[in-house]
Image 1 (cartoon, rainbow, N blue to C red):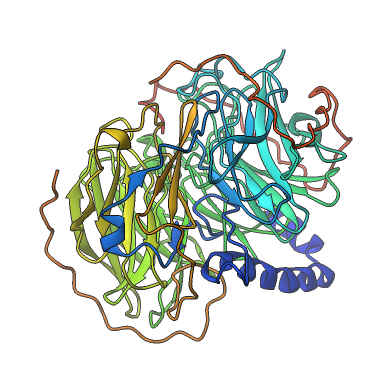
Image 2 (cartoon, one colour):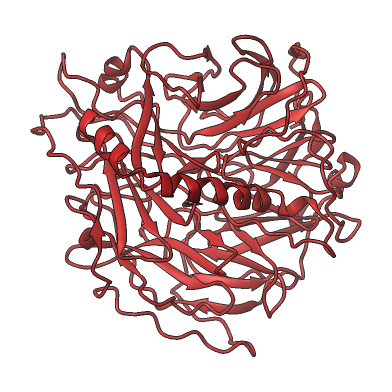
Length: 589
């Protein structure tokens, strides 16, 4: 691992630093596209949880708590797609056919639906046959497109990872024109051919893709059941030159990157959280149970692992069962943090600018009565302070405040019983006011639920018979744009609307807890946790079909998945240690 750090430092040149600095300004602008009036700026949701930080924060002036209480499903929104859905929908404006909702499925189908009608603008059902099962066989069946895609607005390109059936199965990273669905030149990238020692046969892709400084990043885990010689992988592709591919992997076997949010970024560097590796007593740390930071590439930059990382390894207590969330806490020291939630039920806060290797966290607290895995956290700011919220395995939605102290501390704000296994997201009207934490009743009542971000009081209780969703999949999350919430489920994208039509987003006067380089922070008082309020109280996919075409020109046919550009990896993964026998593990995230 030390060798990898030195190699990474050698290639990280002054020229590249200049590119990082100039690109970070673009990232900041894209993060805030949803806060300006429609006649001044487009509204776009280009990635998992809206922002590179993976905070799940949406600013929409229409989402007052009074309006949100009267949310209804738009029964005129068609939303028909085909296949199981584990990925968040995206929302893209500025194209020739009006606003679009992008959805992907495990049947390897990709859809652009009109955001108002839910009817198809274009669709791709020719990407390739998904793998019938995973290697173990896993708990996602079939396996096609799992992770949330990402869109580059500058090139109007959509990026996603698809597992395609074969002998062996292979992961391909695709780039499509987001307005037509046509495959962009020199794509897809065959990951097995591009990255030495990568084996699609044992690697599963679950988390959202990230796009930072002109590179698209894809993180990989193993399959439920822990079979085969899998590793935690991060693969980066230069979107302007897709033959330029870099891969990083954990030295030890295991170390999967399992969480729904995938790769997080502060606009300059990338972060992932890895799961348990398979090590022997006395082995050095070798990639698992850690927050790992990367320079562009990905090139290994820094890491943090708890002092009991090997105990967590032996207990299958993945730190990387959940995704990282980057959070800024004005007035705290340090103020730029990264959050990890472990299967050991602990929350860990680290200084994301100085992770520090194996050692204690900046702040650590047992925050759950049950296992934490799969979910992505949300982060938001209210008059009380900066919060993070998550769903646990026993059907609790919890919100904690990060106190702006030196060092920061964690305190419970509220806790409600809310069945399901959804990743929460947050709406506010201006960045700090009217905060509502939203979840979906996945594996429970199949309904949306909204809670007051300050105290957990019920804002939206799920609606009536028309608001029921079917076929929702674990750990998925919703998306907000133009006064609507969109949620992807098996064979359907659901749209919910406010009673006041389409509000115009307004700029936020406050400081967002997103992890882009912040404005000059305004100190906030240490928050006191409020008392816990009392809360009010699988589908078989249809065969892939191509929706009725519209007037949009049909996309060009995708190249055969067996053909990809010759890729030149810039980092060769290290030799792996000899695999040791393992006991049968408990269920994976």
